[in-house]
Length: 154
Image (cartoon, rainbow, N blue to C red; front, side, top):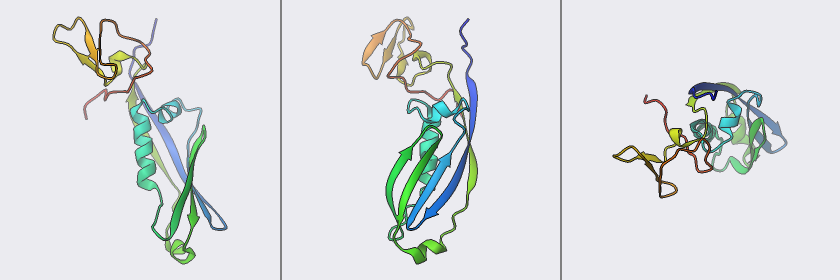
């Protein structure tokens, strides 16, 4: 029997810093064995959007002090690498390692039932896929165009 339960997922993210010469690394790490890790790396899920938003909020780009070089994505961390341009201004910055938790409800499958592109028709015998621009009669359990809708209103 298939599992059709909506799951509450949570994952702890650790933010740390490494400084080597004139290079600063800002590292967002997580346990890749946590089931939620697959959702923060998959653009189809809301948990991914929450993770990317936190990365943007916590990024350290400071005009004249730090210059962003690149982003490195691995299975258990995301690393932002900066060049330190003004060492005096950099020394005044407070780099505090921290932890934060991301939480979200996730669907049991990436199918039409939980997709934001699904639009019910009046007759409710079929539905319209906004992404495919197509009327559908059967829901897919898995779709490559899936984009998770909000499962509960807050």
